[in-house]
Length: 130
Image (tube, rainbow, N blue to C red; front, side, top):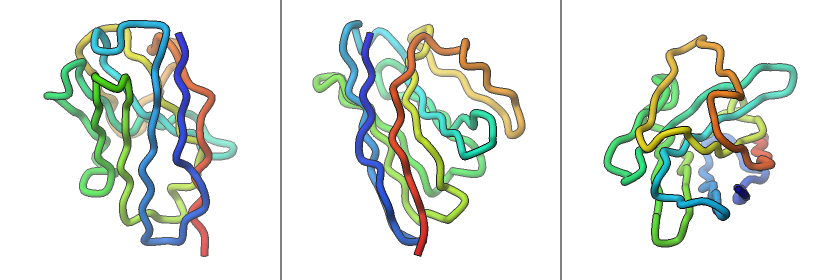
């Protein structure tokens, strides 16, 4: 199983980025997928999840209206469109493979155990700064 994120970088506040996660080594459309981030010195923060077929999504309340998850099963690729970025969005962003076909969500301040996911990418750094 391999997950490779890309698309991170340095962006000014108010800017946008589109992250991608290319999957291999498993049947991509058998599994829900998630985006999770980790800021320096902080724990994992769950952002968004999408069902195997892309028809059901969940997004953290604090990200709704700014972050949009999607997937292209034909390309084995997961996406995260991030708009209106803020300095507090600076973090390492990871895609993670769910353990089932259906996505689940976390509430604000929930602890997000890394073991809830079947596999992780290496992450892509997003830095929001002027």
